Length: 81
Image (cartoon, rainbow, N blue to C red; front, side, top):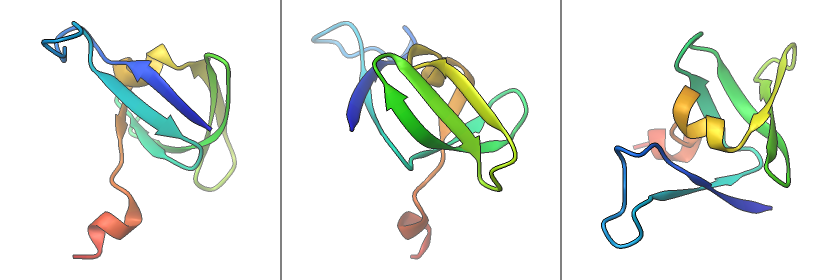
């Protein structure tokens, strides 16, 4: 499932006024607050379930919060240079 979410206002696209980021199940994000790494477990409408890599904790949040409180982690194959 592909979902586009709005980024923060300081990261705007000059044509549309906003910049979009596509989020998929299995994408990974690091919390800007706790530093924990989460993987996208499920996306339904504007809600997203994030789960820690060891599966002990889950977070339910709106897609718009991803850009505010999380940073995308590089995919594993991007680190294999």
